[in-house]
Length: 186
Image (tube, rainbow, N blue to C red; front, top):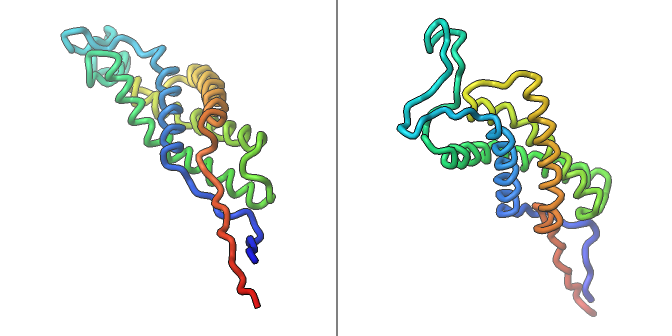
């Protein structure tokens, strides 16, 4: 006689899916912010900043992005990879929050409301990392108005991306079904 234990079983995280969610969310944030990155370097690699009355070290100088490359593509890739580290931590926190809510409510671990909830949490996480990525890619924190515009765009794009990813690759966890217990027969 085979008996399956009660309960829903343990959830197992999928590192590959977590990495995909984190990397693509960091690309969304970097892509939105790269639209307003000024051309900071010339083809010769010299930094170009706006003219200022007090010199380039003064308070009125226009800060540009860190000139660690002369081409926009390596700058974009480098910023996205740096942002992916933060995004990975935030996506793992989102997974833990969703799993805890599901455990407390006794809900199924893969349903449409769960996918919407996870997409919402990851988009909020992407919005939360926008100022950090902006400070790295732009060299300064954006103004409040610009941050709100960027955050709204990041939130929309990240939510849509998370929904598409949950449909294509699924949620970044799977449910481990408890092994059946073989009872001795008499």
